[in-house]
Length: 366
Ligand SMILES: Cc1cc2nc3c(=O)[nH]c(=O)nc-3n(C[C@H](O)[C@H](O)[C@H](O)COP(=O)(O)OP(=O)(O)OC[C@H]3O[C@@H](n4cnc5c(N)ncnc54)[C@H](O)[C@@H]3O)c2cc1C
Image (tube, rainbow, N blue to C red; front, side, top):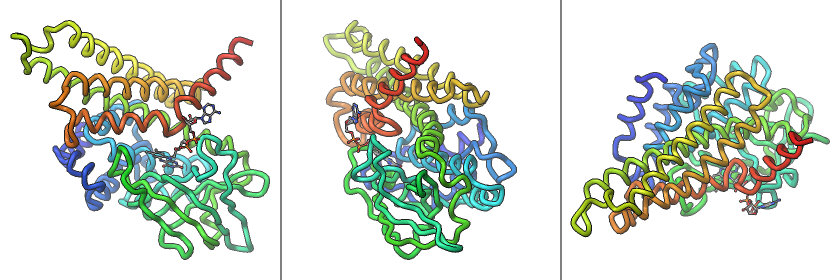
């Protein structure tokens, strides 16, 4: 990973993550600055203006951002996922057009979920239809990360018997973006609901490959998102481990540092193991991605499932070690506790990951 990139983010975030979390917003010029540096979708190839990082290098960078600010990391995940969908499903012209914009400061979200279609995306009701030289989008998406900052949204919907992805500018007539009020965590990630009423766009907004099965479109985009979220969880674990270890060394109770009380030491040991296991699972998933291995989809689900669970339990342990010192808004472990819980819901909840992995286990066994 480029040290320059790491230093840029460290400098820009500084110690402001808690302030942004409480305000529910990251300064938009800062987000755009990172976008212009290619830091929000670092795997976009150099020929499209990106940094061309490998998944492994982007992963370590994502963990670094995740340790600083999960809201910013969430924006990276959605920008990277949308960029990947465009790279994977766009025509040569669409890739050149949109990816250049996404590496020069424009921001994007990606919308799958609807009120009636969360875990069960096959229940999606949004429609995309071609009409002459136009494409028309109708539907209502919810909880779109980054939509509160975005210039455009990659919207997934039904297209005839299959599915399609279309790039919708947020200022197109018929688009309404409204912020989700008071999210529990990642509060500055711009989560928004997006209503799409008879939105008419030039046919060039419809990504090539329209009509393919919904499951293929969704799995492809989510695989990128799962690896990214998993690395973000590694960052949460590193931040929690650091905070818990520093506190356990510094605070004395019963005449000695907390760290010398073995039950406190156990929390630290478990945090370390959680971080190490999550890191190894993420490294494996990223190597599979970089090698275009057939194991990639499963490895991404394993990494996401392990890392999200470990981050949620790890953040809880860190709050336990800090106790009253960490039990308030504005402390890194309190923020991690709220942010990490959400990681068990997104990009395939714990239960959905388990269902996918059970299916894989059965397939391997037979
Ligand atoms: C912070 C955050 C960011 C998000 N960002 C985005 C985004 O950028 N774009 C986007 O499109 N969406 C986004 N979402 C939505 C997210 O993808 C959905 O919340 C997620 O898919 C779960 O859907 P749901 O909330 O409707 O829960 P439901 O599907 O209603 O599930 C409720 C519970 O039931 C369980 N469950 C459901 N079905 C089964 C089953 N068959 N077997 C066992 N258990 C089951 C689930 O695991 C869960 O625990 C975001 C959500 C959050 C909280």
